[in-house]
Length: 86
Image (cartoon, rainbow, N blue to C red; front, side, top):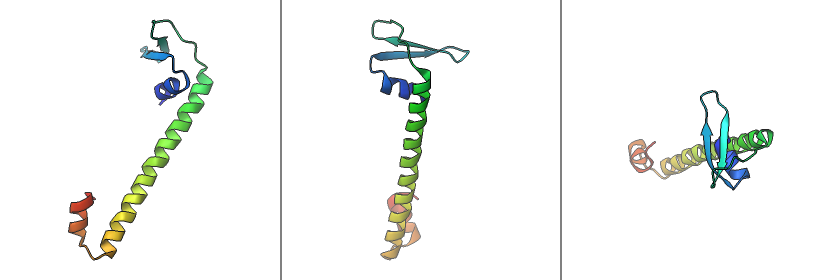
């Protein structure tokens, strides 16, 4: 998620290369190195991960709710599975 955070915070970044030791080389469109505040990038990465996790949990909850509503309408478990792939 750190790459997404860097791209989000620094729109001039076009390429991120990761060395074997884990260090990042961050370049703009002209292959010039871009200096990045990694503390800010890590904070943004945590925020993005949290948003992703929340969206994923919401999708699971909505799917379960939809499944239950279909069952409440009288569909069989097999019919519901055929419709929503649960």
